[in-house]
Image (cartoon, rainbow, N blue to C red; front, side):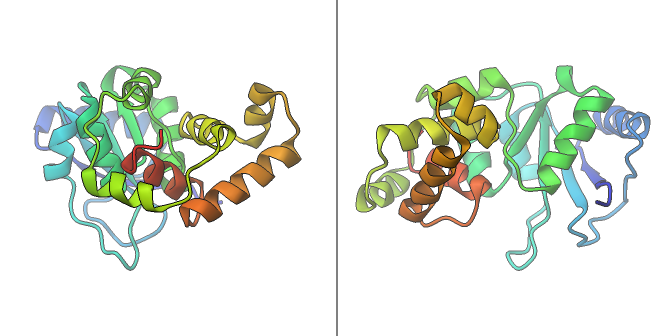
Length: 204
């Protein structure tokens, strides 16, 4: 598979230079403008995650590119807003080593979910501000079973099927069946969409 490339958006010139340097160390090619390629990830580097909503360029609905937010401060409410906007991978500046940056870019390009552990705990702990519209949409769906909710939370932590099976002491086949039924209930396309929908609707 082709390695991802990156387009860096950073209002602060010093932050931009640091991110570009880390990308070079990771062997990641940066492009000066978004090129529409599915392999190009938009990297938004800001002080607070809320700034990413302003700094990140709008994505075309027909062919959205992967997005990665790098920030110092993550308020749960703003994390939920960023997740709703379609960005499913976030990284702390303190954790943005070349190897972790490369892994985060890969995850963003592939549509995976990856959040710092403490950020995820804050969101799943209910510290975010729920969206009344999202809550009403959730109320109109069939509620998830406790096991489906647990699997969805583990998916949000970035666990694959094998890891979820070990956590729940069940087989991979059981996990696949739970995920299949959960996605049907949520009417979602894939794992990333399921997590974003779950966060938006207050299911996790």
